[in-house]
Image 1 (cartoon, rainbow, N blue to C red):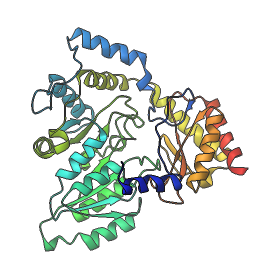
Image 2: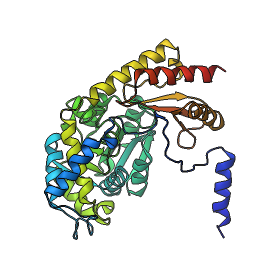
Image 3: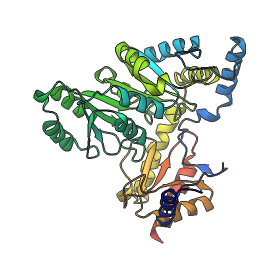
Image 4: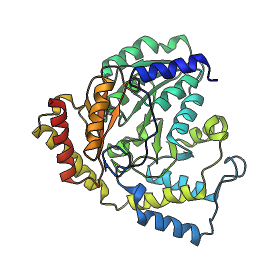
Length: 379
C-alpha cells in the first residue's frame, strides 16, 4: 500500500488541477519542444554521426563505467578541448545532463558560510543544487537589480568572515523567455567581489554559442552551464570555466564522480552538431520567426499578456490551472501543440501558455496559432 501522506499529496495535486501525466508523441504542429533548430530530427546529423562511429571503430552501446573508472573515452578529451576553444573558455567539463551539471556545480563549489544570491525564477536544477550546498542562500526578485543590490548590501558584509559570494541567474529564463541585465549584474559583481554563474541552457544555439559570447562577456563570469538537450538537439551538458574549476569538479562534484559516463554515440552527436552549428542557416530562420511572431503579437493586440522576450520562448499569462489547461486543449484540438505551464511550476496566478518557436515553423503556422489564441482568450 502507498503511504497515506503520499496518497494525500497526489490527491491534492489532482484537486488543484496540477496533476502531471506522461503524454504520447503526436503529429501536432510543434510549438512546445526545445528543439529550436530542428537538429534532433536531422537525418544529415544522424548519418554523419553514424558514419564517424563506423569509421573510427566506436561501435559501443555504453561507456562501461564512470569517467574516473573505465568510461573516460578519448572522445571526451577531444570534445572538451573543442568546447573550450569554441566557447572561449579555459576549460570545459561534460556532464550527463543540465540537471547533473547544475547540482554538481552548486552543491560542491560554494562552501559553508559562503553566500549564494539567486534569481527567484531560476530552474529547479539550480534550486536543488543550492539546497544541497552548505552555503547560505537568498533569492532576489526576478531580474530586479535593486533587490539584488539590496541583498548584496545586507547579506554580504564579508568583514564578518572570509566567505565568498556567488550570484546565480540564467541568460534566458525557461519559464519566461526573458533575459537579465547581465552588464549591470557584472558591475555589481565587481563592487561586491562576487562570482557570477550563468545557466545558458536556452541561449545556446538560439544565440549560436550563447548570450554571453553574443555580448563578448564570456571571460567576465565564473562559470557558464551549457546544455545539449535544447537547441543542440541531443543530450548532455558542460560547465565552462577555469582549469582550476574543472579540476575541483572532477574531485568534488558528486553528480560527475558517481555516474556512468555518456556513451560514445552521444559524444559523437555533440561533436557533429557543433560542426553543423558553424555554418547552419537554421539560426537565421529562427530569428526571422521570432521577429515575425512578435509582429503578429502586436498586430493581434496580444502584447499586454505576453512576457517580453527576444528568445525562442514566449509566454502568455492566463491565470488559473483549469483555464490554461482548457485553452491548451483547444489548441490540441486544432492541431497545435502548445503547452500549459501550471502552478506550482510557476506562481499561482502566473500560469501561462508557453510558445516555443523553431526554425522549421512556417509563417502560416505562426499566424494561425496566434489568431487562435486571440479567438480563445476573447470568448
